[in-house]
Image (cartoon, rainbow, N blue to C red; front, top):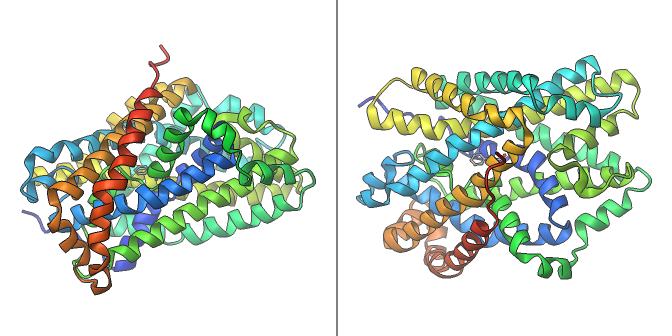
Length: 440
Ligand code: PHE
């Protein structure tokens, strides 16, 4: 066997996990999902889902990864439960599937970063988005985004991933804070806060069978759960780390960035007089550039570039994690060199993403299958496996190297077996009900 890599530093692991969590899910997906699902009530369900399912489930993935020291599928073999390999397999499949359209949105971001330099979108961001989001140009930029992702994964865990994520989180928070403050000063923005922060529970009750799976799915997708990403990343850490602190800091940072994105998008939509749900997946790409358009031309281009460049880094560090799951599974199982694997996989994923780049209806459908089918099945598997199959071993692993967690571990296990399991099961049923046929 080749020597298995590990994270250079503990902060390297946390940054990479945060890098995976914070991405287009927070900045692109969260705002338009909130807008399409009634605003503040969606936010409430989202936050409950992070606390109730997300944090216990992220710890479950950490425990599986760290105890087995193996990636996605091999982890279950190493733990002596080969019949549970399907949980890892769902993750690997989901990563493959998800990266194919995630990269298309990543391509839009690259296009916008370049469009900022030339000032291309400043005249009319809405029309610009329509022109670049589907068709040959979208395919080309999807290719560019995949190429960069492949390059980083080919170089391996330490040199590639840790470096790319170090600067991203602080920059994204600073930029979003700046935009949120700016949005606050605009006249007409107040209605946006009302929509985003003041829940209408009657509407939630009326539409619970679509709003709940959407919000829970968003929460778990945003934490990169169900895709074996956190299993794989935790397989690279040393024993003596406090997984509870890691999981909490990741969940808090991740939720903070999503809420910030909402505090940027909703006041901007309100101030610009646009209907909340009407922009769909284009929301962030239309509102933020429209806000820049008020600035002097040169400043607009500069700030636009910095903004989309940082979003690009955020997208990249998530895309890397998706490709890493599949790559490291093959590297671990067949003891092969990671470079040709990363390249071969990347090419297949690129081809799989062409329909999504050609027509946004396909992108939406790929996203639906990912978040409403693969994800809940994967998370369900993780929760049952950690709660019922690993059981005492899981509690033992959580407490390892962290005396303060030993008291909490049994409570965590108990919650996995009861509340978390029921919540995931309920979501799974509702999610399956929200699936639709492909847009053929
Ligand atoms: N969590 C990432 C985001 O919010 C997306 C992602 C999902 C990455 C699943 C890896 C696995 O953008």
